[in-house]
Length: 70
Image (cartoon, rainbow, N blue to C red; front, side, top):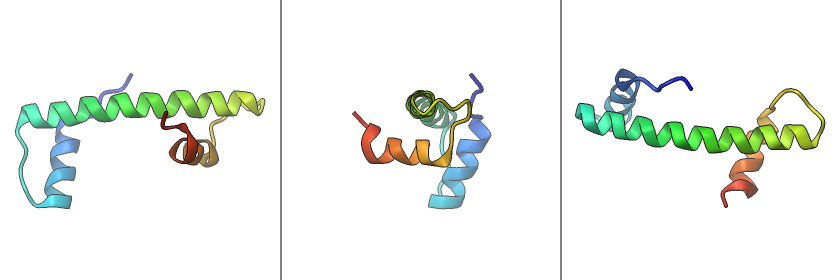
């Protein structure tokens, strides 16, 4: 799985919250985001397969937000 870069997390936190973050803090956020992205992807792929599709759509992601957070 692709890793979310420390620099991406640092940039996001700085731009949205106006503060700096330590390397450890950025690594921890990246790990949490990667885990959540994995859960969302798994749910969305399952939705696509139920509908006999090979591609995940925006609707599959939205369905996770609406009903998949179990």
